[in-house]
Image 1: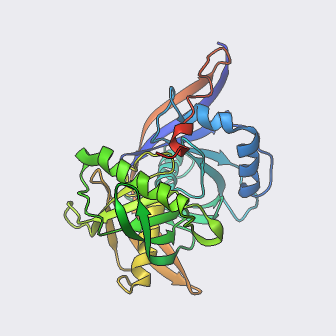
Image 2: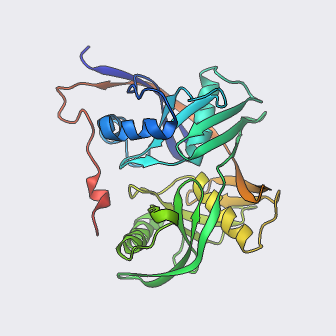
Image 3: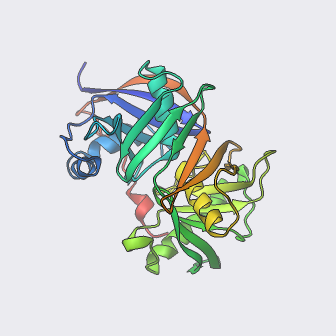
Length: 322
């Protein structure tokens, strides 16, 4: 058979898919994961598009490229990517990665895995019941109650926070967070994102705010709030979003509404949930997120150079101003 073969294992975490690249990925050399990401972006971006975009994938899939770690301090390295680019961290993807490693027989329940990510070390634990608890990178709120004028919406307010990616977290938006309104919610949050960029509103050190998160009243018993999260490539997160929940926990702590060890249950637009907690170490806040993932496919992707869509259908439209 013609073409390069790539072994992948698919899973979903709270409805949000993860595609782990098991073999056949690009040779990114050695060194810190951040350096290898730069090589990935510069020389192998077609591989990213080929593995997650149509016709082999879809806008919601997050890819996870397993890498050898740069030092014995880590058990594995991982680079997360999506339909339009690369992610600093991915909470649902980390949960999916551990479920995949268990499926492959590489780890057993009770295992702790130290992951080297682009933004720092993430510790993950495969619990006895099959759930996964990850301790994310240090998270914080950068600014509170920031106003932005969005075309067709008017003025909205939100907090800017870091949870491994940059988020604009918005309450009091007047939107009903129901699954049958995904198109309307996508349009609403996309307008906010475009307005943040147009007005030069960023995270620390000019970090692009590429995730927009709306909050409302929960509908699942035991949940504390419900969210709708718009991801960088204009797809919505089917899960409660691990880095988004981390950013939310940082905001709650900053407002004095969450104590270390206290559980905050975050509901997604699909009704799935994550349990979040925080610990404060050395003056820094570390979110802990617990959720479940399920392996649902194993496959060999084939990249045939004769195929006009060998490297996927690019999603450059997602970066255009609407």
